[in-house]
Length: 440
Ligand SMILES: NC(=O)c1ccc[n+]([C@@H]2O[C@H](COP(=O)([O-])OP(=O)(O)OC[C@H]3O[C@@H](n4cnc5c(N)ncnc54)[C@H](O)[C@@H]3O)[C@@H](O)[C@H]2O)c1
Image (cartoon, rainbow, N blue to C red; front, side):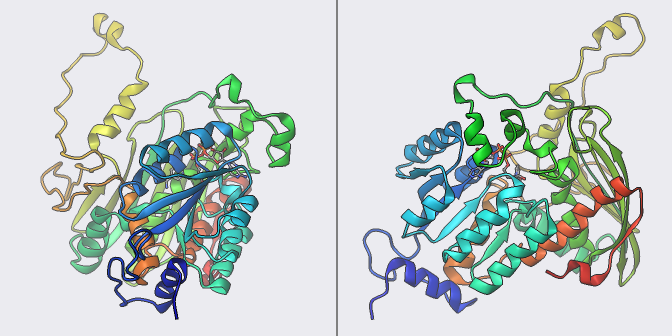
């Protein structure tokens, strides 16, 4: 029996772990089994980052781009075209699924509120899905994605990319969990803080008509561009940014939180719906005792940038997805000029301490154990863009049946914990979780 390229790829991923596939096992000169045909739905800021990473992974072929905004369609089409990928462009994902018959997988990088609709339709059409975090701004919709993945047998990877980052795997899996370097980890502390920003704008000639915005569910062009701040489309900064890092607390302690308390508000940007700052504390029941994690996201100051600290009885590991250089550069970018205060002798100007140079763009250098900055760097470097290993993990699962690092079930558990922070702010109540809350 002769199998088509797509049937062969599907048979391999269905066969599960341990089945290795040789290159061009079908003997094809073009479109060998190692090649995967992919489409992207939502080619905005993050979609382009995923495209950039995929273009570095051998055998990934972009066949289609779907986006409702002409600006994003043109950008993505041109971008993949530069690398010799001829992608068809669609405005509506239904048309994409009706027309494209040789796809293996779809990357979903649309705004959070559309992930479930897009991912479910793709899996029901027989395609594997990589969906960006947050899985959804609604737990019901997030659960529907896990169910569709189970019902269809299609892979669903959620975009918590730190789970595939070799530095985080080394720090959390090896040092903290296997070697016990920190002893009992009693506390964790993480933050993602950003300087004040203006709302996103758009080039006048790419304004979407009111009719088309309404057709796709957006109330205005400004809401379409700044969807993160509105309850209909997203979960606000705590969900957008916090989901990556709150996910790590579950990873270090190997369990879900038992409770969360939070404070926050719409304090600085009165025209937004979502809280512009949230400070919260999660509690974990671990086999060694209680663990507590503090998390904050601020959008009026980038002090501390974004990083995580895992604090144990024998020391602390500080780590970030980006380099200390990048974190510092972000802080400096919006800093006001304080030299007049130096002239008035109110503060002293001092040369900034030199920042350790790293050889690669996305490497964290600020790893600190027992508070001795820079003394104990991790021996593992990430020499690729931050999202590439997670995409590789997804494509390897399709090609070889190897396990996903963040399957839908895991993404759902994180969504339960993260979305609860907003509820805790709204209700001014401590939220207690039951084990069953995390079952999808
Ligand atoms: N993993 C990460 O590090 C990371 C980083 C940033 C964003 N994200 C996630 O990626 C997703 C996209 O975020 P972004 O920053 O790129 O937003 P964005 O607004 O820049 O891009 C969204 C794109 O989706 C398109 N779109 C909107 N509705 C659509 C629809 N119904 N069908 C098709 N296309 C549609 C828009 O036109 C736009 O091009 C979000 O879920 C976000 O949480 C993940």
